[in-house]
Image 1 (cartoon, helix red, strand yellow):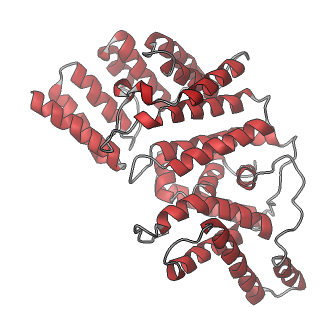
Image 2: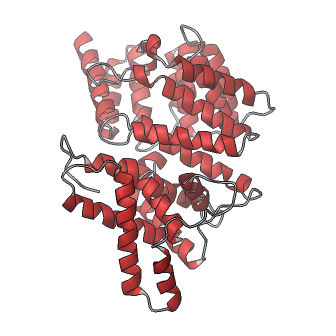
Image 3: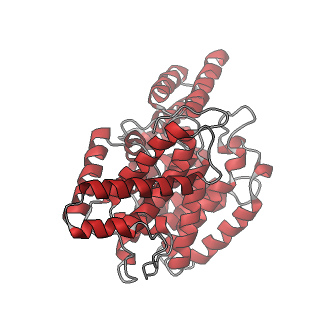
Length: 404
């Protein structure tokens, strides 16, 4: 979606906020994901031409317009009586809801896209595109894979849904656990894109709040799944720190420098209670462990880094990925110093991930290896896509040069 945002009319913002809800609603009405997506895109194109200012309920306007555009398209393209009947049904939007355990259109969409016939990357890429309104570039950055790979997976996923006749329907209760891992991944990535957007401004609150809303709905649906509770706790505890994450001039404020009095204590209390609830289980999963790490960060006036490192040791054993290893190295630096932390990340391979050279730059700085730190900052700045993060890295680099 490309629309010039003005003081009165910010179509890009409305598109990002409403796109996923509109596609999910139209998919339920139409029974066809591809047709729903095309109809919503058509409706936004109409909005570009017609709106001088947003209507009171932009999402409802888009859904109504998209439904009408879909009716027109079905009438033009129908060659069978069944297609005409489908178009006629669109005149009756108050049809009975489909029975099943999932009542939220967007949560239903996530479970539908996370059908086991699709690959994990296809599941999450398609859902992020349909529900989050994320562009292929943003999804590729979230996965650290080439844009072409993501684009191909999305196209193939839509084709497979169409050719295999995968229905948009509520999965039965017995099917929900099989799709849970992908659903949790999608919600986590949607929140992450909101908390640290891959481009533009640092925060996209619409995505953060939507991910939390859907995580709450998922927790109501599956209250006995400890990883669901762990994910909700994790999102709440990270969201609790958001008010202190950006300074008065829009600058990034790292955890160690945040004003903890600005943190949301209600969300922290709720998150801590959820952590206590889910960690009563044996062998906690990755979302529970990440929630526990964030509970330590928000417990008391300072972080107990020894406890954080112990939790990261568990998480790395459970999920031995380079990103977990990088995050663990931050805790190693706080407990054992920058030298062993630097050694721990020397062999990590995270092409295109700006936080790896950014972490190296910080460790080099603490070791008084100024030339290495400046080179690492240059690499991180070149890789960072978010304006706020890039400005933060440039400021740190400039400060380092001034002090030498």
